Image 1: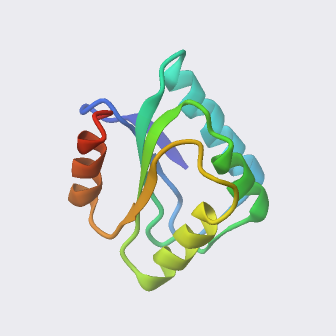
Image 2: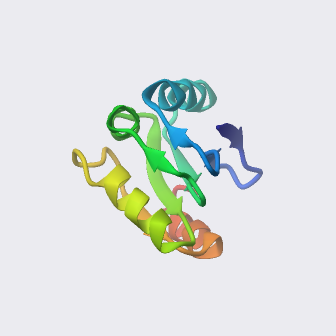
Length: 116
């Protein structure tokens, strides 16, 4: 997984296309996001295009992220939407979270949330 800070001030998390995202993978990403955020809550753009699957353990890790102000999830295929629904369908999300099929729409939403 690729975790970085975008120039616009949000965290960018790109899940690996063609792979199953596991609990340990999600935990490593979570730790890196927490390191980048420090004591702040940051917005995040989560790109899951082409991911094969997300395990329940990974979903649990993602739903417990407390260092995020808002999450825009981006995917482009019907399968991406199904995976996003699974990812977001567990516990109540700790911050505003929404699925988009277009990255520009996702970034505009983060800006409207006054967090990007």
